[in-house]
Image (cartoon, rainbow, N blue to C red; front, side, top):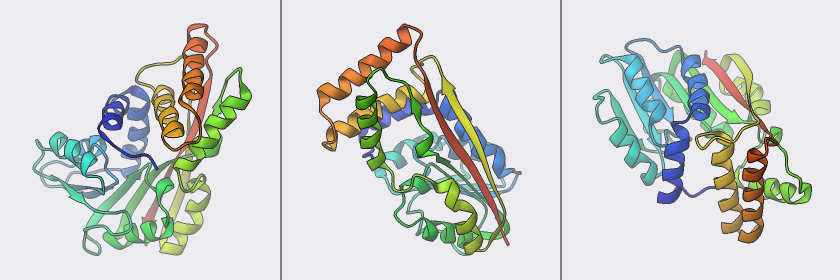
Length: 258
């Protein structure tokens, strides 16, 4: 998994406020069907951007609890949500939420499940903390859908193979119907949405991934720094030449507690 140190957090802070990640976050936000007075848990809240948006939507009579195991991520989340008395940031894990049974109306987890060693436990935990009729929404990556052009196909494949080590489950969406049904959910939905770019933007998902993938491959001994730098520089050059191509599919997942 990625280590969210200070350098990574700064990179993510820029990218997460960009158009691509804002769109991804909005997919989760819209599926929650928020109403004034809702009580919501944001599982794996990270730097708190979605938590803040939820706090704004549920008003003074609602409550949102952002839960994250990373102290380095909880700090910016707490600062971001400080203006909202209805928002709280707590230490916790997806499979051990610091909440009572049936305490919340809605639960959301954006790019969390794909990193967990025990996804069924996390889904059961979401079911536990939701009231009857409560909605669980997740957004996860279709990790095997990444299509990225490079003139050095072998090197591109090595980059992708190195990146494959950073997640636990590549096909969360394919497991979602069975796992949520087994946990007691119904009204189960899976919706794909795609990012496809022929330009390289500093705030885009592709540019964020170029930094994260290069760093991950080197720091975990999968590739040399010279090789990842050459790959990174090639992508920048392709973009300048008008030959850049990047595509990836994400999935918005939802289910209702019965």
